[in-house]
Image (cartoon, rainbow, N blue to C red; front, top):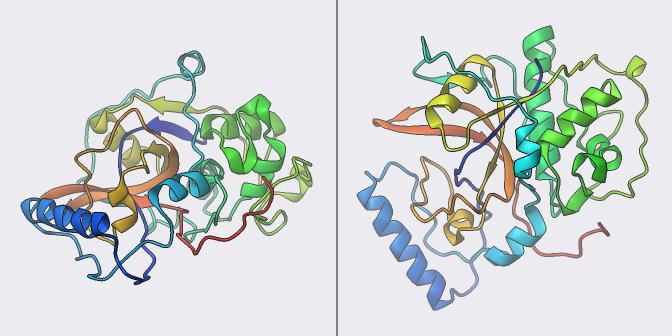
Amino acid sequence: MIGVICFLVLCVGAWTQHAPPQPQDEIDLYGNFGKAWDKFRKIYTDLISSFVTPQTPEEVVSNYTGYVPPSPRQLADIPLYAPLFADTPDQVDWRASGYVTPVKNQAQCGACWAFSATGGLEGQLSKKTGRLISLSEQNLMDCAGPRYGSNGCNGGQMAGAFQYVRDNGGVDTEARYPYRQSTDFQCRFSGIRDNPRVAVRGHIRVPPRDERALLDAVGRVGPISIGINASPQSFIFYKNGVYNEPNCDPRGLNHAVLIVGFGQERGVPYWLIKNSMRLEEPHQRPAN
């Protein structure tokens, strides 16, 4: 089966280095964030001492996030994953198995859902065939329209993307259908004869907030598409290491990423996340 969907509250991010003068509220937040991490065994890499993000948290949410959680009615139509809870490995990194393409850049477009979906498909394609091929986010953005819960740069659903690929009989490669950071909703799919066979037979979901079931799914199935809350202000201050945001609201899922593994660092468990969000200087985004 190609494609697994789950919904879990995690907070991960990326940081771009800029150092203009710091507003006091950001200085205070940095201090509070550092103190919290001191209590969390200080196993992260320290944030840079002079920082102001190139965009405000509100701008980041507006420009980069685009995950639209399925409605309860839509969720009811997606079967639940049945974990085995046996022989789950202590550590998994699907990059080492060749299931994960290099990190991509969605730029200032809320197409995170498409990047998460292709990541899940790429992992299963590699698992089934031994071929790691970068698949087309633009194909999903242009062709999986409102019928599949997609609105291009303005958001979409991994569940709808998987269903589109199933109904369509395949998806283009990134090489044939490159990313444009916008969409005119004109589908240019080249046909399944010219593409690797990505036969999606269905997709399932991991119960929300069930990390034990999610651990089982990642360990057994492969990379998993998930939704996270990217709204906390600390999200854009994170640099690297094991990151936890205690005030992350489970009701605020708005960004799609890909879990590609898990493990522990100094006894603290973590999820290994592939994130297509790369913060940039604000500039005019292409229409839609």
